[in-house]
Image (cartoon, rainbow, N blue to C red; front, side, top):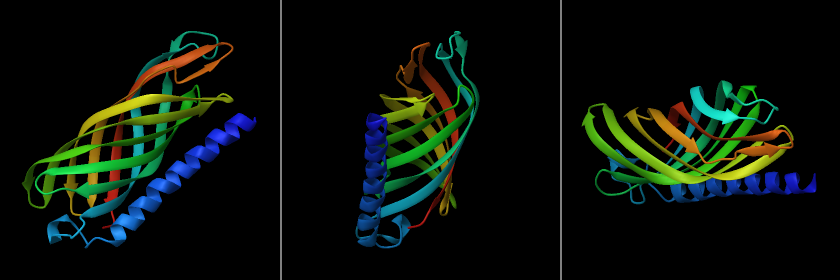
Length: 193
């Protein structure tokens, strides 16, 4: 029990560190990319919905595919570089209901590139990689994760679709293991500055 609380404490500290760095950097910046910021940093909150995901699980004693929906949210910090590129870091929490029930906390960093703009819309591609912590069925595990996707932003609002892969096993019990898995979240976000 002590080990699990230490992992949860570590994850909470990581999440606070990401948000703290975002707030510190954004306090040094002007309002946004389009307005020629001195330090063009933006902070976003995002909601995440997952309907399509795949993988094999023997964690409940029978080999089967995952089933159920996922909902969650998170925060993203973006450093807008000169030109079409941006660096981004994000921490998200997603709860999967169904069989089996589990949670994931991916913390990733990556690159975003604007492809073209048709005012007020901007179409972009993005790729991220990082660490994922999974919990469920009284167990937890950490794994490598990556994603790639396409998005559209209009003003402070953006919508992204990403193919996401988490290396397995996501978690293990005495009855079996779960993972790897892939899923396609639809992300809707709002950029504050």
